[in-house]
Image (tube, rainbow, N blue to C red):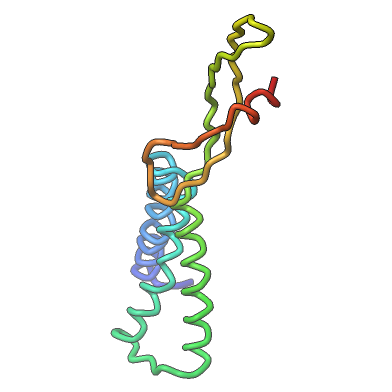
Length: 136
């Protein structure tokens, strides 16, 4: 049986490394959302690697540089995917036209799928009258 001081230290380590980290992860998901939390969480291996250079005096090897390149590419993909905002923009177009001397008013409702990288600006687009008439 290990000495009591080692048991206490192991319990404290578990509390910090597992208990608090799970609590903070769940809280971050609630506040930031799952995607952004995952993107931030993806940075953890880089912090661990950096600390291994400082604390453990690890050396740079070819295998390490290859793994670092793969990790950077994966992290970049997660971050870019997290920043892209996907949504549907539903809107109406009203147009008036004349057939045989009679004026008609038509309203066409349709939707566009948009993906934005960070930009939340206004949506601008144009539909020709022919396109709108096809939608009737």
